[in-house]
Amino acid sequence: MDDSELEALRQRKMAEMQHSGQQQAEAKERARQMEIQKQAMLRQILTPDARDRLSNVRMASPEVANMVEMQLIQLAQSGRLAGMINDAMLRDILRQVAPQRREITIERR
Image (tube, rainbow, N blue to C red; front, side, top):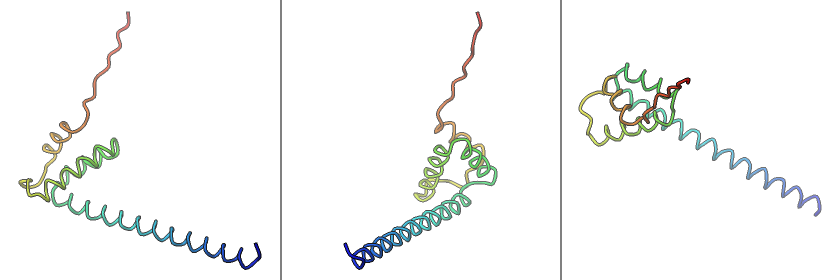
């Protein structure tokens, strides 16, 4: 391999790296835009107390929070939500969706 071939190879590799960096940046931007749209939709269908509860759930269990958010958005988009979801309604939804935790008791003998 002479110097010109090596330089051409370096330039191709740099171009590929720049292209993949651009794709990653575009994917991050799309994800950010989708998150903004999701939060705007949730602001329309959840009361402030319900949003606070959902953010607390997100800290404890992000997968449950994402699942509930997506279900609420789908219900809202299909027109099956009657009004805003308040805190009590969200608690009922979370009880149905979240896995039940069992209480463990230890008996000493």
